[in-house]
Image (cartoon, rainbow, N blue to C red):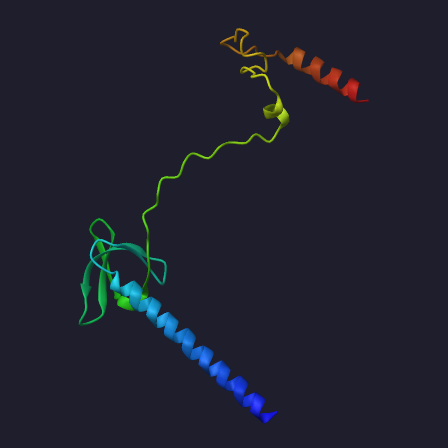
Amino acid sequence: MTILLFVMLGLFVFMMFRRNKKTQQQQAQLQSKFEPGVEVMTSFGLFGRIVNIDEAENKVTLELSPGNTATVHRQAVTKIVEPVVAAEEPTVVPDDASSLTTEKLGAEGTDASAPVHDAPRTETAEETLRRLNDEGKKDS
């Protein structure tokens, strides 16, 4: 039983060292890509472009906006921001069953080959009341 505990402890320590080594390798690989002009993000969420790298003091100067710079520790820069590729315009899927019909409808719900009136007809107040009352009688 004691041997099993030591084996488990040894395995746990081995996994911790392995994880730390992977993290250090990833950080070193990231920092090798640092050069002036690269868009980056810091560990505290600040975005900017690298202007200058001071290897001796481990400092990076970031341009946050034109004319505004900030100096941060090199390890505070945690991510390189990739340029956003313009996405295609998403296709709009209607949430009703109108897209399931085979005939194409015009602006007023009529056949597209029928003439479409330019100005929509407005309803008077009396007509609106009559229509609403008629709908209420049909539902009952």
